[in-house]
Length: 191
Image 1 (cartoon, rainbow, N blue to C red):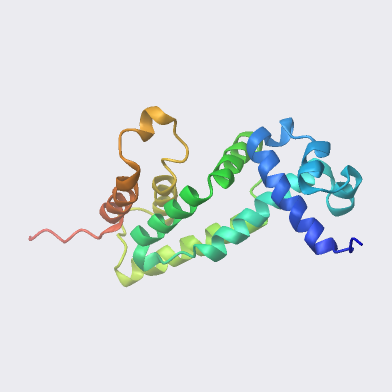
Image 2 (cartoon, one colour; image 1 turned 90 degrees about the vertical axis):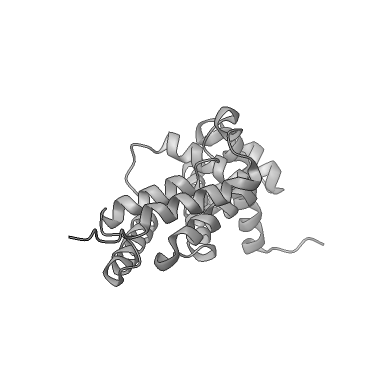
């Protein structure tokens, strides 16, 4: 006899939605198809979320929460942070495809609160590292964060013409070296 476990069904729905949205984006996703992937009725989707759009946003927020928790920033080791972000992206290509769809389909929308809070916390951490002298003050903390995030995810967002330029085994080192060069304070020149 089947048991009613709404938390389990919600989790199954979130996993199926990630797969569906990663493959088709929100515009191409179909509620009946993702419900079938989750093993639930299409009507149940609407009891958990405000339709496909609400589910798309919920998956995005879950990814952000999971990433912030799994890959916390260490502003005194931004090269290591970038490397860990790269590793997470390489281990979860479906998440990266989802995030690409999110960027395409939500480019004009307001930044979700969870993202704004996370970015503000990361900028504050980098500013503190700048005050301690472990990160250069040559650029504002927000610019440094933007560059670190772009470098960490650079191979997830390019086609094979770019990816083939550096072997998969060398990509992490390329990222961490670039971030190290970016953030290392310069020695003052002798006067």
